[in-house]
Image (cartoon, rainbow, N blue to C red; front, side):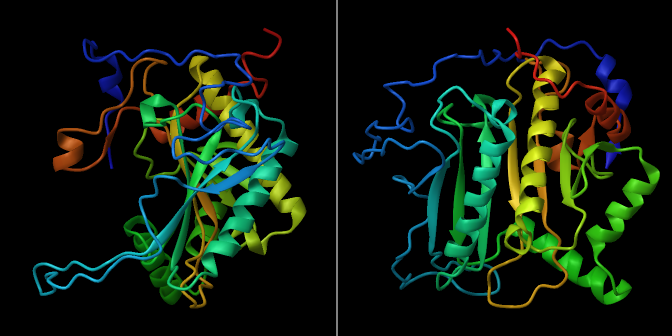
Length: 329
């Protein structure tokens, strides 16, 4: 990782994005995720009062895919069908909310839905991995501002979890312990990159962070998935999500964009004692609510380069209030 903190002093004449204004619209008749509305695919949402889950009307993965009769399959080129299921999880009926502005008990309902989806989809035949992720904000490609995320159940373990799987397996073989348990113990000991913590979880800026204010949420207990945690641990996870996302919003006093994802044990029918539950937050903002980090040039062709040290990013996030900046406005 190339770290170049002096680059934050360079003048910026590039793209300046528009800030995402707080809408204060609790129900949007034109939103295809609001309760009671008809979605673009023609299905009507129920008048839901809490979490609402449905099959994505425009899924990237389908449960039935025909075989490729003339697909290449050799040492250079290989193509094969990929089956799967895609779902949408609406966090709350209120169109205006985000995780940062939801109550912890409402976030706990979302966490429980994530756990249930992991169980249900992971048990389906030909599902090796269940990826839960949220794209927050137009800067991260969110097509709808209503609070929601996606769940993709896929036939093969995707690239990023696969790389993590191999690393955790190799570490366990060579050290006889869990890679992320040992890493978390080191971070707690150093206390340089921790943002916030509670009895069950720690949110920190990882030593290898690529994005300026990237964070990693780690469970203190060695569990492979939410399903291995009790209700108190899930509630603690909801609280740490609330505290972390509130800090994000407070950093530049904006609805902070990010991509967030849970990395849990593969559901390929094999035991995975090496896997440690964690969540990634990848936010693009760098200098302000309107200037983001671009992964181009050297980052794409050479190696990742970050403009602030992970320690300074953690310090800035750690120093922020956990009371949302819009509270009382």
